[in-house]
Length: 195
Image 1 (tube, rainbow, N blue to C red):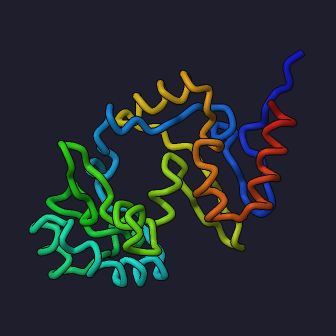
Image 2: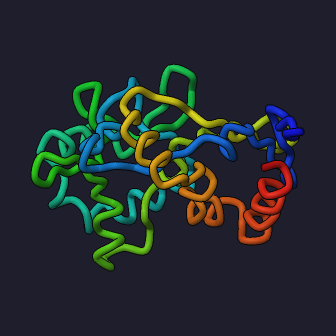
């Protein structure tokens, strides 16, 4: 008889939606062209520490940014408080994150591009690196992780299924960056036991 998987699993001080263990995902940039950095009603959630890092990287990525993005940053900075009062990256024209850049019709993250080229030590905000996982912090420091399903990522779901790559494995590196190697090993152990 197949074991029933609970909807929420606790790993350390983190509540993990079981979808993160059972659903498949693998970004397919050729299919989506980086639409997740363009669509939406606000920028990417950022911490105060990350805002400092964005400002530190600004000189290095400035030439990769559009003139419109540069104007927005000059006017309001790299981040702003959204309608919920959360800090998010600034956006251009209600769409593009100010840190987007385009190559051959594909939207890329200028921060990640600079990081991969060895020009900066900061890759990108953890909220971007963890996507399609969304993080929420509750009172008392408890953290919740949910799998966010979005139409623009339909091809990533298809590719993940083809590769049989669960969300938590696709996002191993950012999960380790956020919660540590020991926590990730515990997550893998829980996944193996449940699946």
